[in-house]
Length: 212
Image 1 (cartoon, rainbow, N blue to C red):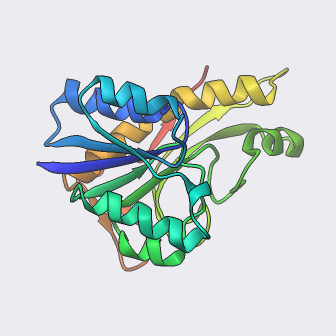
Image 2 (image 1 turned 60 degrees about the vertical axis):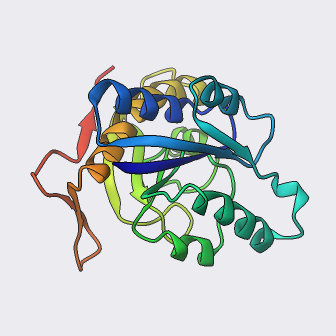
Image 3 (image 1 turned 90 degrees about the horizontal axis):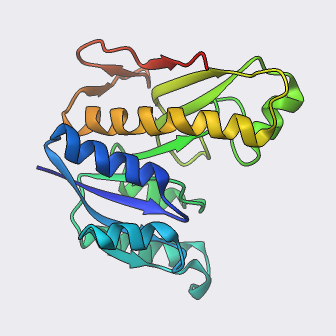
């Protein structure tokens, strides 16, 4: 049974999607803890109501990024995870932290990486005139919003789209591809090649197209 720890900063809608899929689909895994850098994060209450261990490590209480990451790692390690999932976790992690969980640290970003890393992805996609947008699940590396791509979803940019409408449509896709990628990990169906490319061992499509 694989042990999953999820890091959040807010409501944790991707956390909810992962936990729900794990239970409904009978993965050989369990979400054993949810940790936030914000004590008021709504997702903590949701997780606690379902009997999941929760903790908050307030980044404002630490002198610097390294001190926060050390405290966060200590809390994560107490749960002995096989996989650490970033689900709307709004902190830049130090290279040392990333190295600690190399190969077992996943993130989702609301763009088709490597395009539009960082913040304001939907605004930037619209300003650039992109005809499609989407989301990417990837293994985390020390470079922000980079790392081997596991799975991507593509949605069209529609006439009249705003950052809010585009974000909402992409979020629907996030709730589909993130649980799928996590399931592949816990079922040992992902292989990271020497070329840095992630492949599915059973050749499942590593993309999802939405037309709505």
